[in-house]
Image (tube, rainbow, N blue to C red; front, top):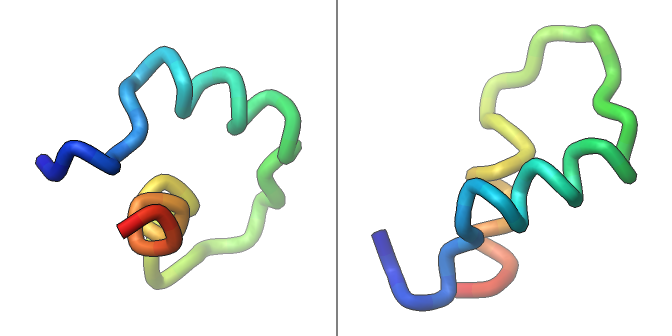
Length: 38
């Protein structure tokens, strides 16, 4: 885990706002967001 990674609480908030789609993803949205903040 990196200092820039989202906490579980932060991720749960973002996940609710994004309304994740049902399709299967190669990478989780959490991994993508962590990469953006890295």
